[in-house]
Image (tube, rainbow, N blue to C red):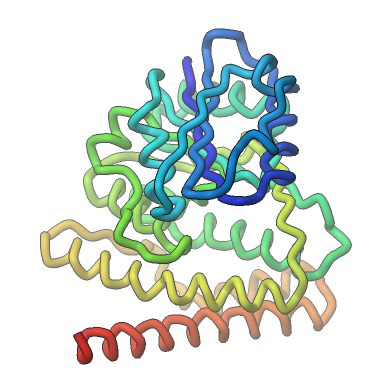
Length: 296
C-alpha cells in the first residue's frame, strides 16, 4: 500500500522539527509514501524544516492562508498522490512501524478508515494519563450497531483516499480545532463506510498537559461539541444519522471505567472536572452562537 502522510502546522517549529525527525526512522519502503506538511498561515517553515530533513524525507511543503487544521488537512489531501491518506499532528512522533501497522490493518479488516493509538511520554503526569484514558474510553464507547468506531482522533488516523474524497473530507465550517474529527466519523458511518480502531498503529503525543490545561482543553472541545451537535442535526434532517449502539449511560460507563483503573481519587476528580468543563463549553458556545445570530 502507498500512503500520503499529511501534517497540518502553524507556528510550532520546534514541535514540527521533532515530528519530522521521527519520520527519518520510519520503516516503510522508499517510494511508497510521501510526507505533506501544510502550513496553516503560520511563519516560515524553514526554521523547522532543515536541509537535512528536506534531503532525508519525501517532503512536500504547502503554504496556505489561515483557515484551521480541518482545512489544512483537506488541502494536503487534495495534493496527495497515493491511495491512502494518513494524518498526524505536529506535536506527535510516529513509531517506526506506523505505516506498516496501518497497511496491515487495512489488509486485515477491509475497513475504509482506521484510527491508531497514542503513547504517553509522561505517564507520571496526572493530566496526561487522564487525556489518554478519555480517548481510549471514547474509542470503546462510541461505536454504532455494526461495531464501527464513530470517533477516530485526527492526530493518528488513516483513510482510503477515495472514501475521504467521496464524503468531502473534514468539515471546514467548524471554527475551532475541536469536534471535526468526530463529525467526520459519524458522517462516514452514516454513509455506509466502515471504520475501526487499530491500536497497533501508534504515535507519541507530546502535548505536555497540566491539569488546568486538560480542563481548558475539554472546555474548548465542548465548544467544538456544540458545532458537532449542529452538524449531526443537519445529518438527521437529511435522513442520514447514526448513534452509539450502547444502552449504557455515558457518565455511568465513564465512572465505571475510572473505577476499574485503580487510580487515586485525584484522577477521578480531574476526569469529573474536565467533563464539567466540556459541558460548560457546549453551553457557552450555544449562548454565544445565539447572541451572534441575534445581533447579525
